[in-house]
Image (tube, rainbow, N blue to C red; front, side, top):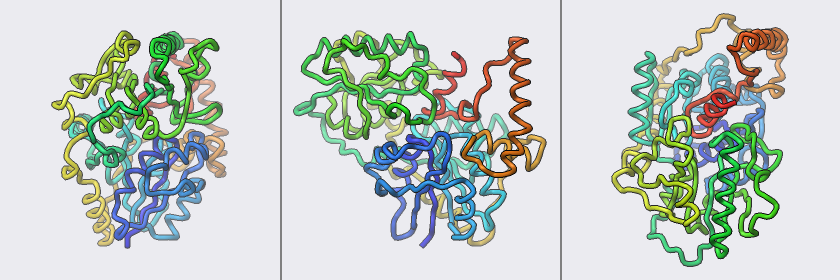
Length: 435
């Protein structure tokens, strides 16, 4: 029996990591989850929602510091570790495991949800991982091309988006369904005007269809953290005189889709879940179709439409020709489990190759401590982290102040503000470019 430790942090990474690892055969792999303590770590209610429907119970991802995770891997001899965390945290976890755990476990990582078009930072931060999970033939091609253009040699492996394998693809029947479900995202669209315009159209839709609930399905309630900060929460933009059938709710997306007559998003991965469930859908193109909005992948899907479609409750079925290259390939095409087994065998033989870090910064151990401190903030309580912060933060403040005077730098950003290249992390590109 092999052992694998899944390391998760924010809500979207918990959902993806737990769902993917649920597919490992239980007679071959003993799988544990742990939530690494960080600024983005999911709350207890978010953990419960994210773990729902997976093979893990609601209390299956206890919290631990990075140092405790490294100690656990060192003392318990796991064959593999799956790093299902946001970008800066992924780099810090992978670096610590690579530097400190002997014999080193196989390191598997990847990006949840829609990862097209590819972004360099997602590769850069995870360069030392042995396996990099993606979810469509299109994504594999695009990431291979990007890696080759940068002289990188990732081992990309294919997995079906895990929640798709649990969906019963029966013909859609609207009987007994009572909701239009909008999958909200923390950063797409980003501006207050755009988000308010969307809320206004949801209000108009609710008024036009009083027999339906119009649900703004959010990832977090007030005070809860998400993979990325939400500057303008939708709940705060809904007018007090909005129709009573316009509601803001959290919970598992699968539960909402079970009640949906139609699904709406700007670019959320939940659109793929809705397609799998045969729920007629609408991907808004009112704000454009671009890499910044993370909706280029829906070109040719037949789902793009505008506000007029929303208010009229005109939702669409996906174009069959789009499906196979975009997340709905045959399960038999997946190779992530076979590649994980092969890497574990190499580890047994002492032949697991060390992969070089892409970050070639000067500074050695103090630089690694600085990167870790920026990723974890107050949750990094190491002496080296405090020492690095004492040097690094004053330098950053001075640098950004000088940059502001020259007009060449934006405000000081934390490590989790840096784009990673997937649906969640891609939203930060929008924030950074518009802030």
